[in-house]
Image (cartoon, rainbow, N blue to C red):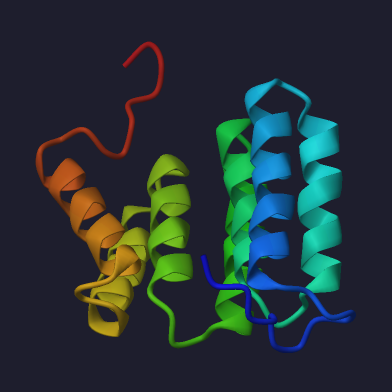
Length: 144
């Protein structure tokens, strides 16, 4: 495991320590302690303002709670931090699909594929595209 420092951290933070901090947030989330998870992710975001990872984690938390607009807001923040990364765009596409904004989602999917065709963002974007083409996304509203 790499123990180099995170660039732009407010205090010296190793990648290992940052990973452990974020894992704590995900554990709180898994345990249903959403406010504690939010505190951890927000703290990590403040500690590492030049990293999109804690901002994506905040979005993931909101998404898991069904707060797709708030998740999208976090994903847009991650895009501002890492404008050339495909992962924030793919996550934004997922939130947009769940919000029923298919046209916008398709633009984000394409941007993610263009930015990161072989990376995590590209793989998520491809999976979202395949789910949309299979009719699994966007999800149907109850009663329809």
